[in-house]
Length: 316
Image 1 (cartoon, helix red, strand yellow):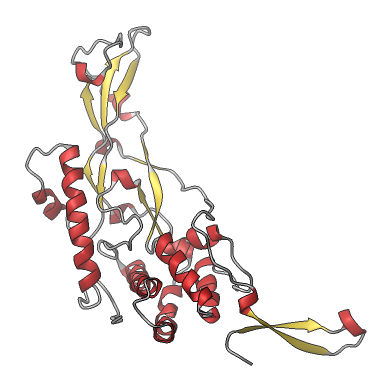
Image 2 (image 1 turned 135 degrees about the vertical axis):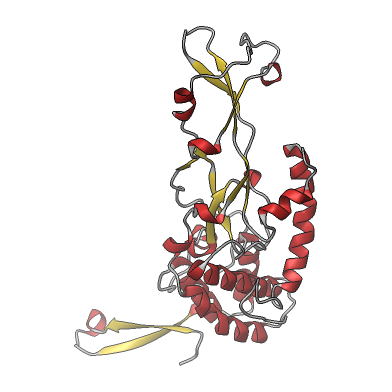
């Protein structure tokens, strides 16, 4: 039977009333089609996580925290310690791709067009953690848990991968999660090369078959979780407190500048040295954008040659 065929065992009694069984082979080309960019759905919520009381910066509100029409008065005082410590503040979390949807979609579409149906079937099984015998919904591939790391929002973290590979991975990770993410990064490099036509389909298929099994050793539920010890809080959330002018003894928070989290290829200490001693958040974000581009280019070029950053080398 051709390798690019699915086979099903069908009870022949459905057709002729006998007790015999026979097999029907159906080309997988009938199942797999391309993914237009617009066809993606969200899939599942991220469980909430909260800052510890000692991770929040509390300060008295200042005049600059209010707009000109505000009736609040900044008197330089803070509420009692018990009031501040009782303030529960949620960490805004998001699902970050290891291999971006853009890379996945482009490689998938080229695999469909070049009739690499076995590659498609394996990608479906790997990413949806199912049998892979039917055309998957775009959201099932885009939001596959094996390909997601939960962390602070992209605007609240350094080096958000965006439409690229998660070039920070697997730095700051340990054990089996580190091995899995390293394998996914390598797979992403291969898929990216294939999607950009930088490797021939036959050669891509051979390399893909060699490495996909390394990406299937952990379930998605073990990857798509928020691991606090993999992240460092670079700039804490900032709460500016002011007395409520209408309710005696009541306190309000009027300002929440975004925090800044870090996980990745630069240690927190090294990232701190990159900024001036009293750098504003805006300066940090501007310089981070430059550092991100430079780091990403260097990582993609070197990761396959440096065993600290990658586990396998696939020259494309």
